Image 1 (cartoon, rainbow, N blue to C red):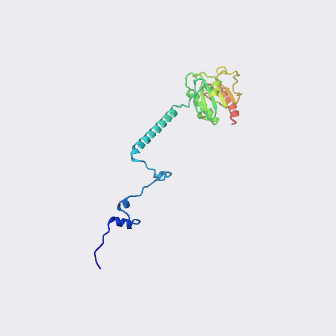
Image 2: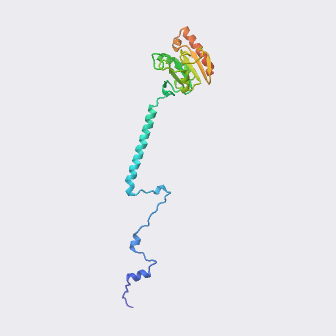
Image 3: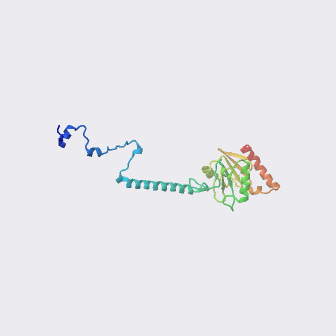
Length: 221
């Protein structure tokens, strides 16, 4: 037998093994990956758009931070003791009015109330199971307000009025001390000044006793 080898041309080899022959160029080529558009984990950002996308994200974050700062500034500037009313004036009061109790005083020398009277008032509130956060303390010596203006901004279940006449509050009601007066859904209670209840003398005890008697009824203590 002859050992001579027969070498067939490439064109003949292709025609004979066209169904099984794998060319080197095709074997090296990787199949194209097509991501599922519903699968966010395979999302890809084209290289030429990467910078634009990063810039857009940075702008969005800056905008969000700016909005957050604006909100913080608004909240910081929103003083709970300054509530605007319809005629653009402001009612200044101490407290948060959580229990819808308003206390009206008249103190020419203090923004709200002098220290001694405020201490006494805090003790009275504590006996009624209230705190300063439960009330709105308004000093009408520093701002001229009618009762209607006050209730329009601060609807109240009880208004305690210390040494302020009904005329000052522009209401046509008798200033009867230590007796509750119902005005719509609001009860009014007129009292002598807190300063007359300071100390341990007989007159101060008498004033505090009269006030405490009506407060026990109103708060069912």
